[in-house]
Length: 316
Image 1 (cartoon, rainbow, N blue to C red):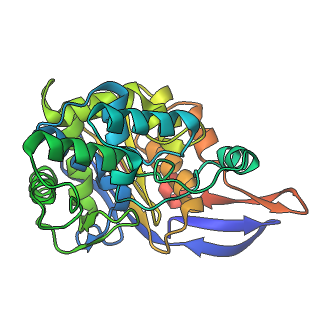
Image 2 (spheres, rainbow, N blue to C red):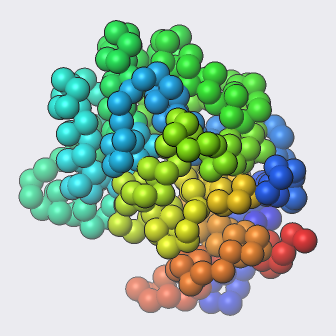
């Protein structure tokens, strides 16, 4: 059990999951649950996908490269950046295979709807990744109408890159919510891949992705997302969440963390993330904000989702 749901002082539910922590030398320091079986990391795979896009020769840097690894909130600056990447390389929104969607940020979606807007491909949280995939295809003369096909040269390169960085063989390939291939590895493999990103030599694709994500965290998530808050406030941290309660983090010294909430509850991710990082020795006020997951009753807080006490203790 990783988290519990407490309402009015009464535990009304629990969230189970699996978690792995790697030491700076890459050895497993703590393992809870099943950390060796394959699972779908969802968008936590995006840094590795972005590294493969650079390996393919895509000319992306700065905010544009950060967007390649993003699950953005669809805020105006996200939509504008994705559109600019497409335009700079001769593409338009209609070339994206990801489905139209509303912004993920609650305040932004209200603004869009109030202005008479609706679902667009640019607002879909993976539009930056899809735009980057098109750029990689253009750099190689690859077909663009089928860039999400698992047998496309770009997707084969992504698989090769993911296997190399994680140390796992991809056990299964499915379809992610955005329509791109979704490749299954283990939680330990996911943590190893993030560790490889932060320890990579400067100028390598992996390090370029890590540096872009950390330099432009607002493009990875959004104004109010945990990944953005964590990378903005804690020096050297690389963080990327995935759907269905997935999270991966690497610290600058090579320590890494990956977990999956079994029932996919996103509400448990913040409390578990904050507690696990604190147990690893990370000390920063932002962890208290990330841990906030209040339960409301009559419009006011009456409880919370909180990490279990065992998770809060140090793994030494």
